[in-house]
Image 1 (cartoon, rainbow, N blue to C red):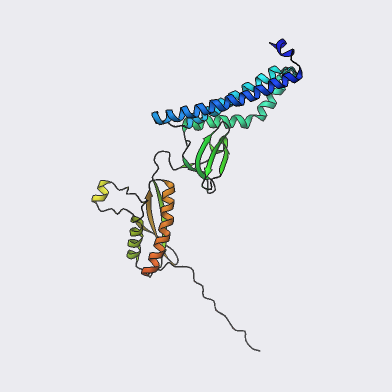
Image 2 (image 1 turned 135 degrees about the vertical axis):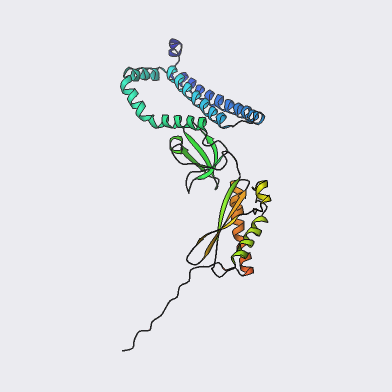
Length: 286
């Protein structure tokens, strides 16, 4: 086989290399497209998680890439001789390769652990910190892709994301509770303020009822509002708002802040804000 390739001129060899590269790209595209269609249909019929399928597609692409590189090295005599020289000093080569690929292997192992233990899956809504939150789009061999609320992609290495604390809004169920706080003055009618907040919340279409039959029989309200604390200039009320998913719960809280403010203004419930009294002292005339 080596003699067969050695009879090719340099021009033909590089043409053959280009054909290998083009062929691997085409094979990779065809396989990923076919696997995507097959896995999509299979996940719908069997109601299974598509995270494993996405990871498998990335693994297949990696295998195709490694195989193509190996074929190219075997095909071109200059590269083949270079590889033999490198392998002759295998100890140094292994040390360099191990040092250079340490982080890469860490990402691959972390990606495998993510797929096995499922702290999050493709399609889950997760939050890592105050600045990183969104929907998981893909889990590759190296990194995880998150589409944030600005429709931008946040690409995080698997080794980094696997070591962080993750808030997953959809891992078991999607319904979410948002806590909305309202401050009213000490002179305002607290019972009236609570009634306004509850009425505005119950009129919102995204609010869901999470009470059990026993709660309903015992007269537990649909929206629970508690006096949270006494601040310097206000009594703080907190309402628990339930929605079918995290995004709708956020919209519910935002809409409630708007409608409650208008109702407070119309019905004389004061929302306190800091006041300062400034004394101006006149300078003494000499």
